[in-house]
Image 1 (spheres, rainbow, N blue to C red):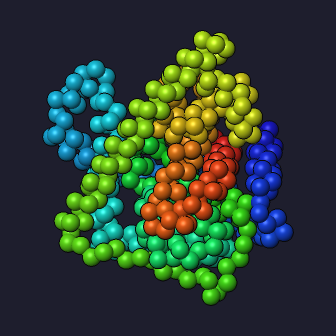
Image 2 (tube, rainbow, N blue to C red; image 1 turned 90 degrees about the horizontal axis):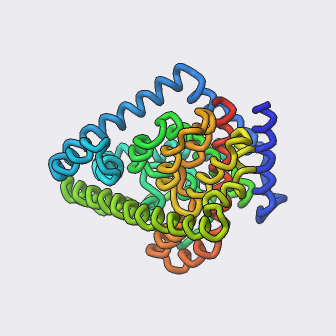
Image 3 (cartoon, helix red, strand yellow; image 1 turned 60 degrees about the vertical axis):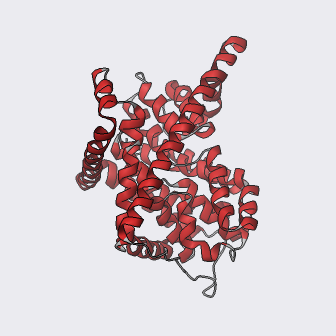
Length: 396
């Protein structure tokens, strides 16, 4: 039965993407079929094989170690607070989940500085371009987004931002919204099972190309298909390290501020809806998103609850939704896994402003173009999350 529901889900996702396609006759189906098959193979390998378990375990162990090292620095600065938090059942969320972003950001900076990350990103992107039928720039950008983040990635291709037509710019921005940055992966792993985080990272990479190939199909000529990556300004090692540490701290502060605002506002809106209608805003949204939860493989009896968490992610962000998910005690393990995969992306309303602002900071005219197709970006990125959850649901 779950295979029939998954097939229905894939057809619904493709249909919804086809509805808003700006070039229905240009869609190339061969790369789509190849990428769907790759998603299924990778989903099975990661969730149902010993090799997948070993790889995910290794990945999780690395991040667990990094979080342990991060805790040394956090304890040194916030020792009293972490002790109080431990006595009351756990360190404060800001310290245990968000502060490690600083350390992981610093590590990314070091790998950038010694040229390991640029090499890996560039050549994985080149290999992907052979599979997805898109340009080298689009493939590079998708891999780079998963490492550098949805705003920082545009700096690495800033020389080409002003030269890109609207359709190629859309694909770059769609990749940035569909993936998550490596600096924040450790925070996710402290909230949901690492195997779902890793699975979502891999599936979203291909899912972004699949949906973009339907919503925004085009071909890139040899003359246009030039990958020119912006070299970072030469800095000393400690200048670079200080910059990445501060960048990581800024990300942690921004996420904390958004959590405070969104959690409080959702509580306020829930209170108003409960008083007026007798049902909370999140419960109401749960009914809207329940059909999507069902085609992802969630049993109908849990679909409204799952749909509420999915809606929370879209109207606020994935952190708020993950916090809601951790509070759920009645959801089955299968539903928890499917919803977890759905949550691992930047597909929410606030990301529209972040991405448009990042591009505008590099090229004002192109930033305005991005802002105009912002809702279409969110629509496509949300379909990517649904597709990844459907594929994962086949093996849970």
